[in-house]
Image (cartoon, rainbow, N blue to C red; front, side, top):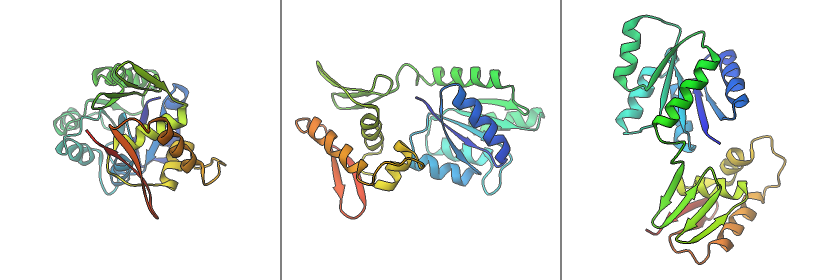
Length: 224
């Protein structure tokens, strides 16, 4: 499932966009402005960003410019209420990939999103490689040579999350919120249980390991 971030200060617009995206099979996160969006991007794997131009603190132009300065290739679809050609040009100059004017045509937006994901080769290459190990996000498999391990969804998402940010420490609460959801009723030891299962499955694989950071949480270490 592809994960899309909506950066939009209008709450009603966020609700509408989120509903449309979820109806079309996308996972959705939200941010009320560019600063919040950067925080989300620092802590989550995001496949595409939908950014409004006019936002408090950090607008869509500056948000996109900072992403491109950091060499991020994250696809960006910029939204605006303005139809002036110079606004559109400015958007492309700072690095947006596509541009839509409000009110947004929902069907067209979904088609543009699919095109952006294809263009970024995310649809066909939604994979993470660590040496000879490949994690296939769509198939929920981990492969090394001729050996392929199919994981339950939560175990895979947990491993993919940790390995996407090697060395970064994630608290149990962060992992619970992102993978199981804030409203989930799972017990506090759910993350521990899943980490132990992953360790048991891959204890003979030297390419990576999941390390417990006492008092904080977990991090993944790549050994290649």
